[in-house]
Amino acid sequence: MEIGGIVAYLVSLAILAGIYAVFTLGLNIQWGYTGLFNIGIAGFFCIGAYASALITTPMPTGIYAQYVHQIFGWNLPFVFGILGAALVCGFIAFLIGIPTLRLREDYLAIATIGIAETIRLVFNNEQWLANGPRGLMGLPQPLQEWIDPKHYNYIYLVIVLLIMVIVYLLIERGIRSPWGRVLRAIREDEVSATMSGKDIFHFKMQSLIFGSMVMGIGGALYAHYTKAISPDVFTPLYGTFIIWVMLMVGGSGNNKGAILGAFVVWGIWTGTNFMTDLLPYTLKARAPYIRFLLIGILLEVILIYRPQGLLGEEKKISKMID
Image 1 (cartoon, helix red, strand yellow):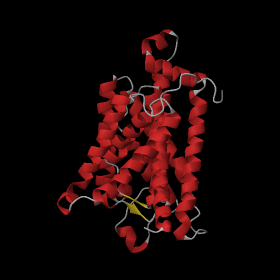
Image 2: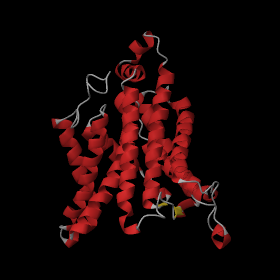
Image 3: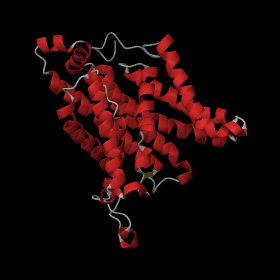
Image 4: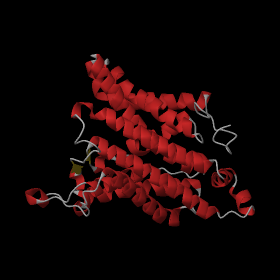
């Protein structure tokens, strides 16, 4: 492979790792700091991607309008797509939180994964909403009119990393405030937090909404990178399980660890593609399962030898800079 091809591959890898880092930061708010066992990340991934796509694409016209149906089509800039994805995910999280946040951890997990799959099936079966199983194609990308397509990924990498850093700083600011300390208190002992006069339900709701809005931003970034989305993208494997692995590997309760875990796991995930290319022809059909096995082994090793993750949880959190 030529140097240019290697660089292009690494840029693409970094873009997707950065997008998954945004998801992992959102999950870290909910699980790492509050203890909310959310296994419905794929649902907010799906909502964020579709919300941004529907806001930034024009309403179909002509012959194509006979085959594509959608409820938005505002043709707004990329920034409005990002903000819209965050707001829609926050609103949906509020509706989900009302009946689920009073459940125990295991029941909350069952409820969220069921809701996530329901969201995916709604987009798949209701064609009037966003073209059903065909999905949406030709999504716009920011600044694409002024950038040579051959070099556009470099610009999008900067956009993704910039948004990731902004999200990281906002979360750090919140977590190192009294609000963040209440979340940790709820995670450690709800009874003690309640005896201190804290409204547990409302703080949990805030955590669920904030984390889901961050996940919505990740979904929007993914949609505009791939420029095409369909319901079969938002499966539990790629939309939930791998994000949990990233957080566990990096370090739950540590935002730097969440980012590191996303880059490490995604690098391994894509790197194993080269390893499976070396397999004999008779085993190539099983290459995806071998990749799952390698990720599973990685997670087991981390849990056994480094249960706190590559970067453990910080003990001193009151100040961003010591």
